Image 1 (cartoon, one colour):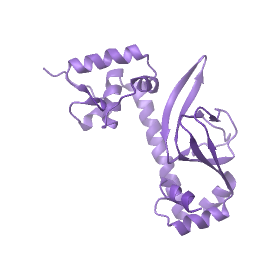
Image 2: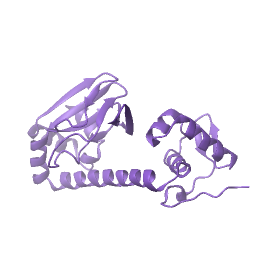
Image 3: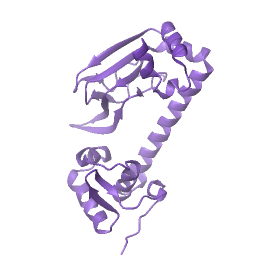
Image 4: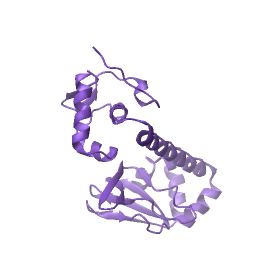
Length: 223
């Protein structure tokens, strides 16, 4: 129980909770902890949602099936709550397919019991609202990137968020929904314009600027 509680303390949903408080909650709420191998399909888009699913260890990715291709929506590292906003929707189904990229440890928490706990615990409810609000902010940003930004702007915004550098350009291309060749052409242009460079840590911005992730940002070419 101690190791489990320590993992849960790292999650936003349990921010500000003591070990004793979390232990008390878990004694009231039924749950199951399982491990899975890399490449395992944890949930498919359209599956019925009955449980709150917590990623305690490992990395997964979320994708949508479109014709013969899978569209990569996000790569998710622990600790994380998977699809919390869809748990209590009218249909209550998984919005995306979730697949493990590494061996993972996951916790299935009974959805109805968790809902009862939210109603009796104001602090837990506020943390849950914060989780949902952060997710809405993320999705809003994704919609903005795909609908309003050029690929050049999206690349700069992505690099701004990954200040330690980006090594997996193939993954970056999948997240942006473009061919690797298209991404390579934009990166070549950005290098020519002296906005990005390659280091041992991967592709990085030459100069970090808050403007890189603002709506409507258009980077100027440097001489």
